[in-house]
Length: 144
Image (cartoon, rainbow, N blue to C red; front, side, top):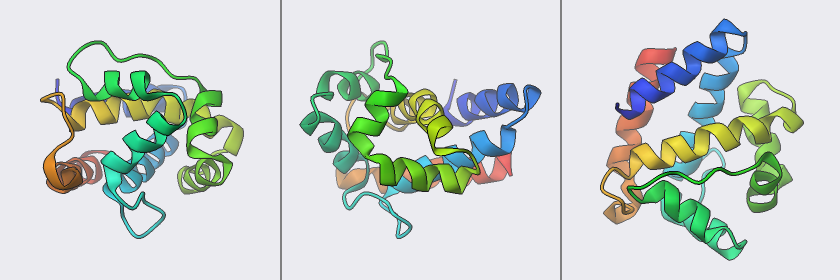
């Protein structure tokens, strides 16, 4: 199953309970973050995010998302600890959700997105720009 299938499945599940717009908005924000875009992205994209997690003692967790095995879970509190409340609040605002709800959404979406952007178990050269752009284009085309 590809990145788009997983994101679409997550978005459709959320729509059934309300909040599909919020899920897709959060996924868009995460892709911008990982792409190192102008709107608050990490300076070195996916590699920068992996470095942030490693520096905060979560290297084993993020490595599981990049690797080809089972993805380790992460809690909303761990997301807030690694990314910081300002970044979580920024993503919440973009998705139209309360900041306390954003951590939970990010904890569900981020592992899946990172996993799908690293299908060979490693971060693509150059931060994975082309893969991120492709994922973002697919996300925009299918969910919006």
